[in-house]
Image (cartoon, rainbow, N blue to C red; front, side, top):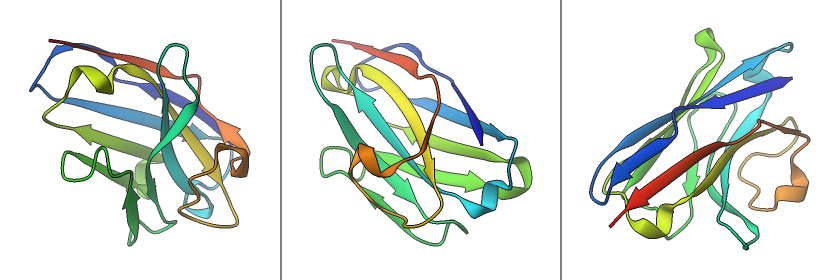
Length: 123
């Protein structure tokens, strides 16, 4: 499956952004999906995960209550709604896919990655 992330940009602290990840090439509903992020000089960290049908979600503690992951299988698209953004949310955000297990927080568990979209939150 090919993944294309979009929707990043520059936003002030307290603002909102919605990221999208368009999938192509394979049956999207066969893949559990996640968002990860990587700040400059840091490791790639788990942000949120969603199961194949969208019925189950999981979040990193740092974004719980502010971010919402969702998917529309009919549109082959994954979303990340980000509210109450903070400067520490600044990072490149990546969508990732795998078939076997949903909710893994290890980047090595994912077979497919989007190219990343940059989110910059100014204070």
